[in-house]
Image (tube, rainbow, N blue to C red; front, side, top):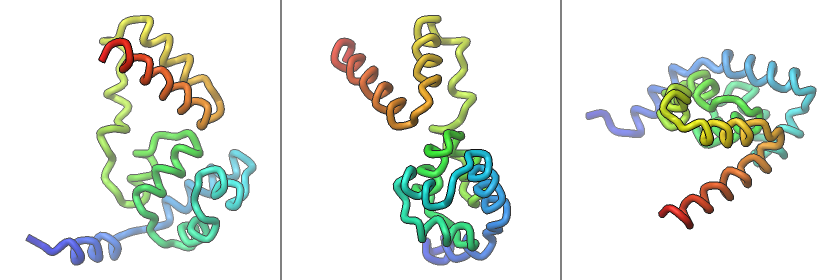
Length: 135
């Protein structure tokens, strides 16, 4: 088995930053947002975002934070950053076919909240209530 340090170096060598850089620039342009604004809103250091745009491979956590800020599926950015998609973000698991209509209505209402911070607070509050009353 290959040592983890060697595996990380191998992956780093094969990383092509261009697709991620292009997508991040598109997202910034679409939102009319600066790198500094995106860094503040995502909780990342401005210099860190600059290094990503310069071609450095970001950490997986940073990619997820950026995706959350830009309100896109993290798997879209993870694959551009050379990471495998994560099952937890797989949209196919969110099929509404097996859900009661009330659950779909709640999920859609939460999804319409434009502010990601407020949306997360509401979702957390709903989960807290569900755990309190239904275990």
